[in-house]
Image (cartoon, rainbow, N blue to C red):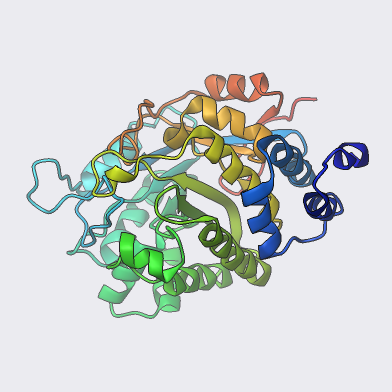
Length: 370
């Protein structure tokens, strides 16, 4: 590896590369320098070093499905293609019974996780959603329930008149196992004013995840990129996550989410290309040195881009999903959001990595190939 680093002609870039190879934490200025100056091949090399440090040659996936309870939402973020007003012909709102029926469709399948995220419905508080979790747990006790973005949690807990700690404790008692990473968008407040002004603040997002971690509820983190933000905003976002992870150790994975242009009021921006996706994955893996996993959410970028990202720092392909999410298809994704485990494993092997089926906390569920 030192010989490869010596082939980097730019002296400043080589100094940053030597830090990374030596497992020395890079600074925000270093991260910004990588975004602006490192070519894709160098980023792939450096991200690969960090990836192998965390996960060797392994690439994870799980057997999961989604429940999206409603797309009725009190917020109307400019980037969102999912939101509909109550009464809109394209809106939906599932009852508890309908959502339990979705769970029952998987009775004969070896799924291990249900992912529950939707709009922030104006009518329901923590007890409504907590009772749904309880019903799912009673029906299928071993199913891991990863549910509710920080934005949903903020509303449902406030509506119930509880503190963050009280609300999260009660949800844990109902059966909540972990929290997804949605709603983070970009933490810079000036950017948020332009893209999601009504939504909970970045500080509140971080406070909710910190409170969850202290209660033993792990979570993921996301970042919406490829819109009006710049590289400094991305580094600032990752720096805040890195600091919180230093404090709590409660994040399982970081998931970069690409802005998709269809059916929202920011469509004029277009979308960044696949090269930018790979640059972003690589810098994320390098910068977030205390995050054990970087996830390529394939319904967003497509299967082939997710496969390529394994060579640029990612180590997790998410899951089988089984055509149970509409969030990205409504934003223009052309992927049919369903793969079986054989398809995921084939993609991973073709990229030169070893597939590992995992549970929601990244414990292997199958024997690792040698």
